Image 1 (cartoon, rainbow, N blue to C red):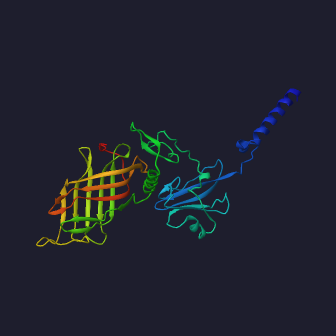
Image 2 (cartoon, rainbow, N blue to C red):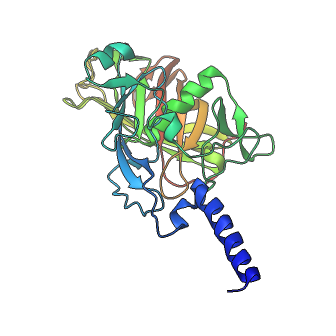
Image 3 (tube, one colour):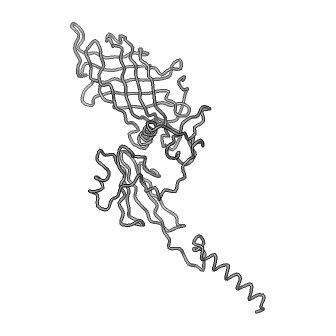
Length: 343
């Protein structure tokens, strides 16, 4: 073999040895397979959220087995609960991470779960690869990723959804909105004004049983279907809201009042009092925000305060005083359709 050929072979061997020394190419050298591994996580969320680690070899295919409520990562439980990581080591392929709502301190919860430590989110922050969307960058449906910490996906002055800096109150509302979006119930509403002042008594209003919102462009609230019903009685109110002349108004109110606590039969009046009326003097003011509904198609949830203002009026022989029926929370819908209310 000539000296020139031998020299070229030596140069090739030296270059190949250098390439093999680089970790990024180690699997390609001399038939030696890499034994490096990492953890992937499978997460499922409804009211709570659980993530299970999966140890896989780098470069191998991960057969992810999706279950109901499958998500890439848990919602932000800050302020409403805790996230606990249980593992034997940092590479434990059988580790699990759980987020849940609790009124107890997180460290206190961890004491009673052997091997658990408190983490800010699940999966642990160091093991999530997703890049967040920076402030001022578009975040419309279909764009991969979530807004970076301290920002929310909101329409700008031009109506374009971009990640924007948000107040602590709005960030908390955004967390609730996302949590409800990933919840199978798709609603979480609390009645803040539990009584109605009427000519048949000061009635105790039942809690929300069903709620569905309707949305327009960028998730603007343009409708609401609300049922307030006690599970063990006929006391109920069914309220339909839609946009009319640029405003959110109640377009239909039905209900039954005689079994509501506080009902007083009027002298000589009927013992059975039902309501069925279109376009009563009731309008809705919504103060809040929209978030991604986390469905396979474009959808939105509405989170905030839903204020139904009942003007002094008579509805089907029942007189109502001027008052407000206020609910707080979040409710989710299907695809956007129809006009938005005027600002």
